[in-house]
Image 1 (cartoon, rainbow, N blue to C red):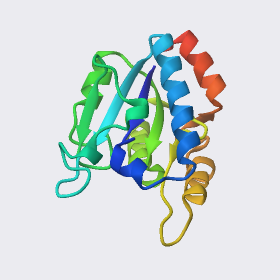
Image 2: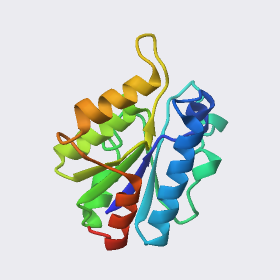
Image 3: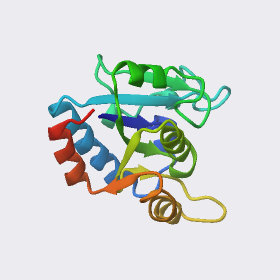
Length: 176
């Protein structure tokens, strides 16, 4: 099992996604729990040229509150899915990973694309509850988007949604 942290970057956090402060606190607890149980934490970082998410820009950096340790992997991507044109799948295959806990930003974009790609690749997917978020758009609030994807799209179709405490207990068992 690994914990995959998708696009929790300074530029996106500066936009104040839904429940931003509590979201970061939950991620901090989950990441600390994974590290304590030797569950690998892998970060995904989006690169969008000529934007605040361009390589090297301050906004491209992973948010300081959940920054990776020196020995933790970061995979760079330019598409919504963390698997599309990256070496993530090859890395997970090399490690014989079968289960991925996915957290991050933005629910309806990169988290969803990564989750569905992982599903298509036949990984077991866990979504820790309230550990993904997004921004309001012209049609829906960030809260409604997050709830819709978590409850109506992912739950029991693409992923198993679980309370953080249950995910932390899984880390203790550390399944592949």
